Length: 315
Image (cartoon, rainbow, N blue to C red):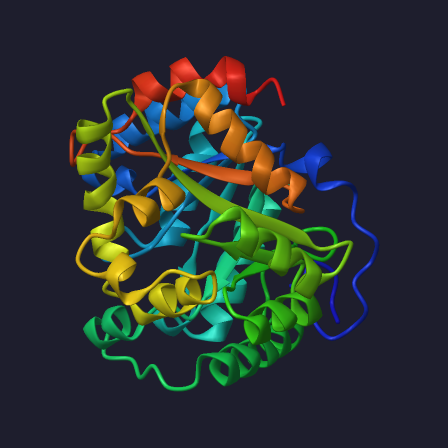
């Protein structure tokens, strides 16, 4: 395998403690697509200045996520930019490997590639076939590593570049431990984090996303939280996973029961969020990627990021 290629089949080397690289708390946001590029640059620069060590951004139907990562890397000087996730069926393996290697060479040590199969509904929009996710991911990683080693011709970055896989169930978590540097989980309770750590074993990154509403009124906070849960409870990957943790059809109906909403999207002050983050860390997470929800459907929660920074960055 050539220097600078993604991790392949060779045994992974011992990694430094995740906290030394990524920090115990990162920021996760899918809201950047609703802001113009100048606002995105300004917002991520502020996150960098506040001291957040990692910013996760996703890919649905907005900007191409590797382009977004490049935009964010150019606007920051210290922060790691991570994809949560880059959809594998949205680009061929050579394109994915080339994007990762190009960003890693341009911004050494500051790009983390998160890969995922995504969901059948989103893949239909792209004209891609969502068939057997585990097999699709395994075959994609094989081809991505081969293409990086045999076909990539640009100046490579130094060293083996990290990647994590979107994973919920035991089989995908096992693959994340086998063929990547760990897993990025989403829409999960802390109990899932404990099971994911057991499945991954030691020495692998585990980074769950945690949504949160910084608001003290229960009715208003849950109304906002339900805008979030309602969109994900339509996707079988998430509902099937939540059933493993005792949630019933009644809990999963519509936008979710109060129990489900409060579990997936806690609300309140900074101490409430800090408590939930610590639950994930105690369960085995290396970092928790905090997704702060905002009442403005197209806004960025910049006020909340500022307000939460002292508590979150104290960990």
